[in-house]
Length: 476
Image: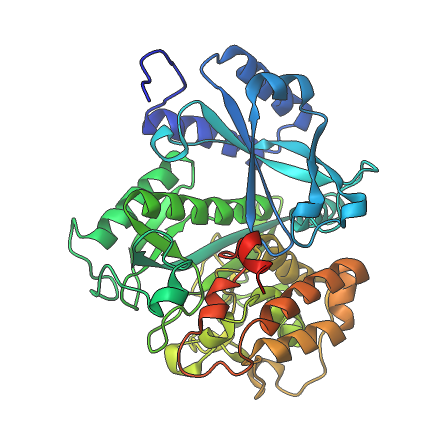
């Protein structure tokens, strides 16, 4: 269709980076909400080339949803954006379907027109129930409330950075077609750190990194990973809610770029048996008035007593949390000790089979790395589970807790049982949301063979929460 009569917003990547970094600085400096809201509304009013605002939110399993609101409508109705929650898995029942989206004005992004289309901006939304309170199954809202309460009560800032691995497969929607082919086709077999300039994997990584840079991610490094056609694109740490938002954007960007190239970016934890799976190593720290509370130059591995107490609490609750950190049937293929997988409830500076690693750090970068997280987990639930457990959980009276012979589940049924029985998961999520989440995971598990076996089965791909659609699910 001709575009010569249209003049929708299209900005250069440098212009986009400047705008997104300015917004990121506002979030970091906690500019008052009313000031940011006023600035954004004025911008949307004055910038005539914007046609729509894309509002993003995530369901209980972490699947990203997007609604495009016409700009003129949004400017009149931004404080009363309603949607049908009964159509979102894990949200309301049909009899109580009306929910609202509140605009989280600081979480505002300008995206490249060649990836997201011209004339659009993106913003994350808060899900609000019909009574006007944060919706209990919106885990982003739960995480946001928890972080704000800790800041007000203790002066704590929760920081996180994630190393998100994925696979690039040949063909568009390769996951949807897996039941037909029973295989995924690599686009590159170069391996760790090795990809020739201009080959498909390198081009994909370069393009994705450019988009991330333009959106203010502040990239650090990117490279092919150990398995064939596997990638990892790292970026700077940030405050916990922003960090979780960036995980959702990262996966969205990867999928958009891959689709435009005729490929599929897959975040299945173990799509191919016999090679390394994909993880989402989650690096966390806590700061207070700009000071990293996990750093102690005289501490064991330079980690402070507070940091070690944080580690001990996560190890204590490791099996309670496993379903929240490894949310799919396929995720338990990855927890295989033969492929550097972190299946041991241990903490170590060097052993990559441990659930928690203590990386080399300094006064600024000292952190705790939770390695047992899969890239398909709900990022808001991951952050909430890790920080809530590390700061508020219990410490087990187990001899040599950090090196005890304890293991994570090797299948989703054991993880489900641990999750349902744990009092701690009820404390974190409440009975209602915990029950909804467990039921969703049970439904997925029941659609797949109970024994994983030695090759990836079609149902564990088809009924994966990142892949399924309503039509497919209802055919069962």
